[in-house]
Image (cartoon, rainbow, N blue to C red):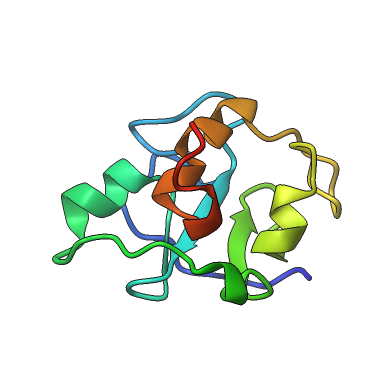
Length: 114
């Protein structure tokens, strides 16, 4: 579902949600953090700019929209995002597969996976 404009906080370097930490061609998602209901490009941006610790999304809330495609501004539920195979279901943009190494920082069920 495409949104006109969604605010993303952090150390953003372009209008497709890339940040100073992750800025390859495929680094085009932002994640809404459960603790503050705010989109950030990455966990480092949250860590460096938010005034509170991260709380991960509990499994029972995976139906909430919490992932933003920086290419088309579509919001995906966590379930949708985890099923994408790193391709946006709306605009077909490729996402960075390396993001899965950080899932445990965002999603409770995946905390022990690296």
